[in-house]
Image (cartoon, rainbow, N blue to C red; front, side):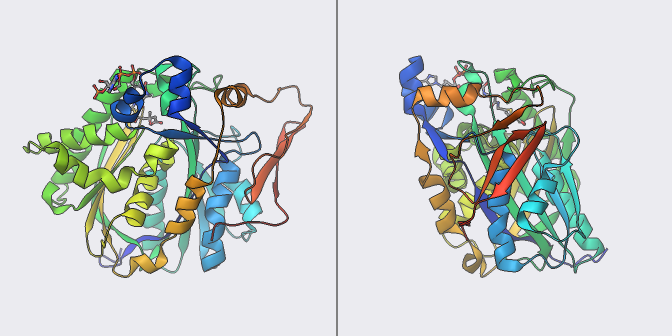
Length: 398
Ligand code: HMG
């Protein structure tokens, strides 16, 4: 394996949903003090998919601008990470391959390990490119986070997709060796096949996350990684943005530093700007944090970024990356901000209707109304098959 080959994220594009529910709306309905949502968990609003949106339509919307800019040449692998699968057998990425018009000479696979799977996809892509640096890998993560109505987890829902083109000589972020990895068999958060909403041991899941920070960091240092002070910014998995603050404080304490609030804010504030508005997007969350950092921070050329990816159950990974000089010319900051700001606010009644909406499982034909105005939509379920379409006037967020 060529040791000095730079491999990493060449392009990155995000998409989210048509609708948004503000935490003010939720708090007004359930009587929660809004400060608990805004300060206590660090969330302001959450993305809610329209009935004709799902992980496939969001994923295609995120990836289309990448194909528009770079073409499909050299893309021989599409990894799709999700824990909101639309089928137990077929990879959601195969629908995306068709919607994007990618060539047939491509392998498409879906990966799952809760919120960690996006990182599994990214690291697998890096390995493939080391094997053949002429290839590029399209990594897509997409998820819809759904908890039971009126449960504590409800305030931490959200939905989004991220698409990343991974290549040699990348334009945005060079990914580094080593990685620190950690696995522990815990039941902190899970979703049995017969449920549409996740089950969670809320406070235990926070402790499990923090133990994984320690475990992955310990392995990272044992593998010869950087010192904690070498990093200029930290991208954590963000089920809610306050979790990133807890994690960073915990990591610094574990490394022997007593950080004050301002130091934590300085390290994290740009990585939390999008997540506080989108909510938990599971596999996407840490990469939404990266998009937010690149789009909103000042000049980051040659700066080192730390990544901590966590997926309940649990698997975690700590790794570093360096921002490539000239990266700003390749960002999609305007399109990203637009994807978040153009969401249409809905009231609690509409949110509840969408939350409770489910296709019957009798094999009938169930078209869904046109709601989303994005480039791709789910037209319905017909004889047990989900059918997607590209809108005639495709408005990609190039
Ligand atoms: P809860 O019981 O609603 O809230 O559950 P709480 O009572 O624990 O309060 C939350 C925070 O708000 C606390 O702060 C309170 O003090 C504060 P903390 O002590 O934690 O720093 N608070 C207030 N602050 C200001 N003004 C007020 C006020 N009232 C309270 N008036 C919980 C919160 C996060 C547990 C819940 O939302 C939940 O179960 N969420 C889902 C699970 C989750 O996100 N876990 C995170 C780690 S696991 C993970 O990241 C993986 C995951 O993404 C899944 C995957 O991997 O696929 C979830």
